[in-house]
Length: 406
Image (cartoon, rainbow, N blue to C red):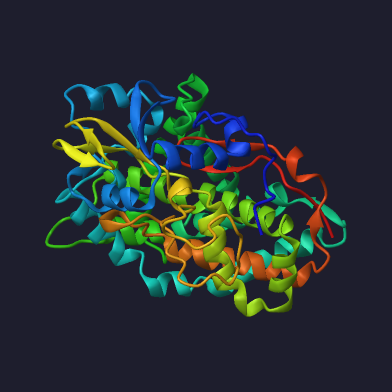
């Protein structure tokens, strides 16, 4: 079935921070992919970038070491670090190439294991059930405010060892990171990120003195070949975990439910056969993923890509949202099919920067879907799909609100 999630007649200009674009980006992305798959577009935070929309080209950029995550032109890093977001994320593993990336990912992987994530399953289920308990008698809720934004913040905060009384602050810091990604250079945003940095530095001191069974305690102690994470690296890592573990999961739950609400046959199919939930999550990641593009890549030398010459130092932005609907890579890409076979979406990236938190995102989304559909069998959208309000930045897309009844 063709997508019903967005109003028709969308403007074909790509504006990576415009609410109008994020309400329905797919016509513009399809236009780029079919007419100019590697082309120059204005970047909202300044200058121009090469915009990559085809699946095979996206794979090349994500896997080819000639495309670096570290800026190549003299002065470019200094210009970017005027942004609060870059001040926070500089030196993180998503902004580092080998050998620094290899060291950072190796250290974090020692704490963020598959066993660690799977052990969270009972607690995530408990949180999801409690959130439904809180709203079950009301017959309606904002699925974003009352469920989607709370579940992942509790999960990531408890994982990190953040006390319950500070969970609300995590939501505020996550929003500040999102806003900074969208180009917010205001003093208020910078102050929130500064507040986050001071708080996490103090947490590191406490966890070193009194380690607990939490991720920050493990990260401050983890060591390999005599190497540990510095305080600056820890701040960048915790910022990354909060943003990736909270903001993107909030949006994924909301986007996924919209996809199901606007494809009632698939929703009925999933309710009838819950064993399809893992496959449904993969299709949601492809069709309506909350991560629309990874961080920028920088050509370390002249590279030909999709018939275009990318010159050394130029910036490349991959559209995962466009690549995941490429007709050369997916059969019937505009159909939302919760039992899609061979779903080779690249929402979590590819290559050495493949998302370390992918197993957690999948687990949370599976539990969220299963709980919502089982506990609220009459769950349905309370407004017309075209009235939903969307927000986004160059890397993520999600809903402001999602009114539902049940």
